[in-house]
Length: 56
Image 1 (cartoon, rainbow, N blue to C red):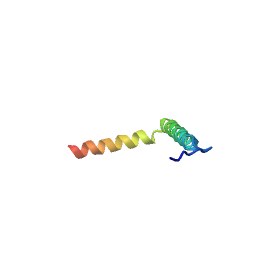
Image 2 (image 1 turned 60 degrees about the vertical axis):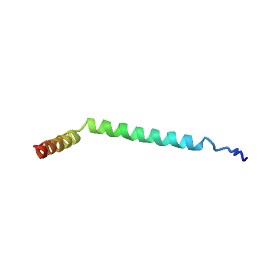
Image 3 (image 1 turned 135 degrees about the horizontal axis):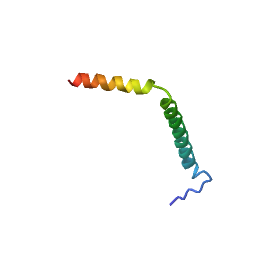
Image 4 (image 1 turned 45 degrees about the vertical axis):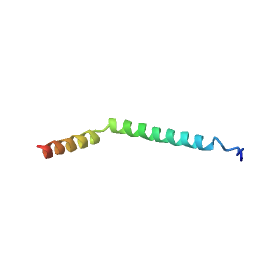
């Protein structure tokens, strides 16, 4: 039976946490930018209008 003893056992966990934090920061920045502009709401409104028009 082999037992792996290494100094970097927690390295993948730390890398995972850093990637999640970076993604959360990017998402919060994007949401803040979207909230300040009318570009995205008008886009979703036009998409929903087209879908409703297609269904009718």
